[in-house]
Length: 173
Image 1: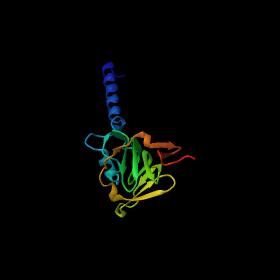
Image 2 (image 1 turned 90 degrees about the vertical axis):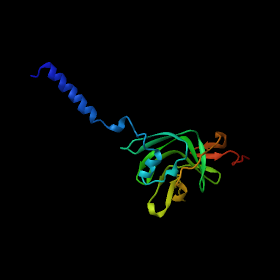
Image 3 (image 1 turned 120 degrees about the vertical axis):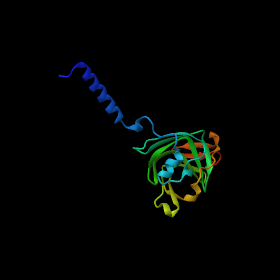
Image 4 (image 1 turned 135 degrees about the vertical axis):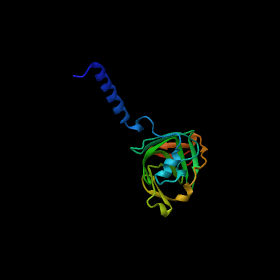
């Protein structure tokens, strides 16, 4: 049998080794040297998918799950207008964002939640937004730089079911 002092040493050695084997991402999701824009680029996506004004983010390298914190809700104009909530989340894989929440796209006077974004072939220059009923196709060059996001009063959007309706766009009889 081992003397008590060597048992204590073995116990602390075991704890040290097992704690050093723990998942390093369980406490820190990202390093301060990287930005969420760098993470998007590393996954084959343009950094302009998210607007300027990102306050902080979390990214789990193992699962691809991310959460972005914006300064405020805002809108950005591309070919269509996009609405960003204060928190945007999803799951990143190469060339794709799935299970996306926090972004809505305007088509005519209706707002549709964007459920996913994908780039099939990076050289094609085309990016697709999944808005539930269809995939909206955009030129990837529109998203090269993070857009300025203009504050938008909540009174301009009203959510009906899973859709946002711009105030004043629907008239009741």
